[in-house]
Each structure stands twice: as C-alpha cells, then as structure tokens.
Length: 199
Image (cartoon, rainbow, N blue to C red):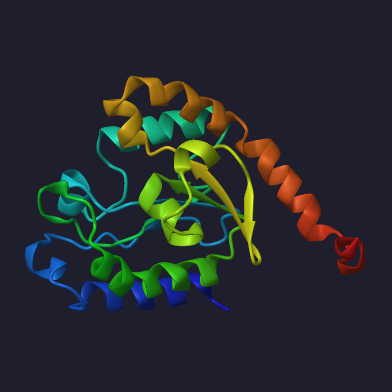
C-alpha cells in the first residue's frame, strides 16, 4: 500500500469537499501533515486563523508550543503526523458543531487507517471526545493511556488552551515528557504473541 498516494488522493477529495457549510468561508482546507509511517499521530480540534491562511496544521502560537514540546522529547514534525477533527476553520474560531464533526469524521478515520499509528495523542476535548465519547472528562483522563478496541489513545490538553490558561501548561509538559515511555509500552504490548494477551 502506497500511503503517500492514498493520503494525496484523500487530500484532493478534502479540497473539493462541500459536506458542510464551512467550505464557504474557508481560505484553505487543512488536511494534515507529517510522516505517513508515523508511530505517533496528534489530532487537534480545527484549523485557526493562520492554519486557514497557510493550509497547514498548527502554524500559529499553539504550533510553536507544540514544536517546543516535541523538541523536548527528541521529536520533530518529520517524525509524527498531525491532523484535526475538522479540516476547515470555523468562523471566528468558534467550536466545531456536531454536524460538522460528523461530516469530517470519515476523513480523519481514513487518515488513521492509512497511517496506522501506534498511539493517537488527542489535543483538547473535541479530539478526545471523538474517540471516547462526550461523557468522559479530559481533566480526569489527560496523561493516561486508554485503549478503545485496537486503538491506543493518549489524551493531552490542547496547546492553545495551555497558552490561554497558564495552570494547564505544567500538566501538558509533564504528559508530553511521558510520550516516549508510553510508546515503548504500547510497542511491547503490540509485539507480544496473541496468546499472552488472553491472560
């Protein structure tokens, strides 16, 4: 399977997407970027002002913080993949609406299916709720590795939230620093023979 080719075709599909009204107000859809063979995938909420202008994820202040946090654990954007729950910027950076999330969800699920990351690091509550449901609090579960079916979810506070609410910055940094050992743990579990997983 040529992952680059499949992702490129999917990106072209996103560029033509009219499934919700957000296509009317966007400058550019923001498909995602990074390593198609990444073991770690970060999923944010939605593009902001700068992302919409450039058509790339996390290029504003939150993106700078994300890059700094990655650097602290020895990673760059070339090592990971970054996407969003929705691909078009909501007007005025408002929260994505339920029908917008539903319309865009198949694109994200296809990206995950193609990239096959070991861990999905959700950034913020919208990405977290997409995978585990709205009744689960990110405040309670951030920094804890969760498994839903065959997918490992590692919830993190959104970098933008940490920039606006200083008390969130410390737990975000601490949770980030645990990513290498979390990945190591998941790699070991995935490589164990199936029979051992039954006990």
